[in-house]
Image 1 (tube, helix red, strand yellow):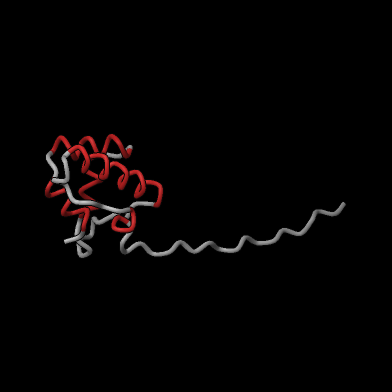
Image 2 (cartoon, rainbow, N blue to C red):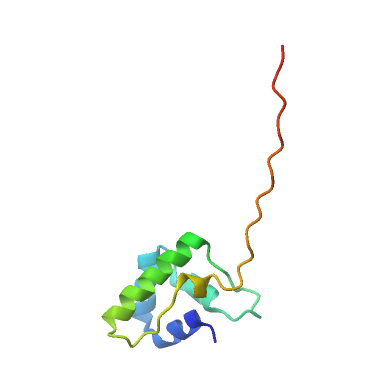
Length: 96
């Protein structure tokens, strides 16, 4: 079980809703992120969202006095393929 799935299992519905609010996403999307690798609907968040989720998890972990597990942005990005940037085609200068 991945770290975020453990967090979702330990969190109450209110805590999940609060995390979604803090990160600027929906509670349903949190379930997509927490899904197992084998699930077709699993999503891996982009870097900015992963960081907001990790920050929100830490805030809620402190509020729960350690009841909720720690989740890092690296935990959330597990399985993400590196983004490859394609080189842009060079345009020739216009001549008149």
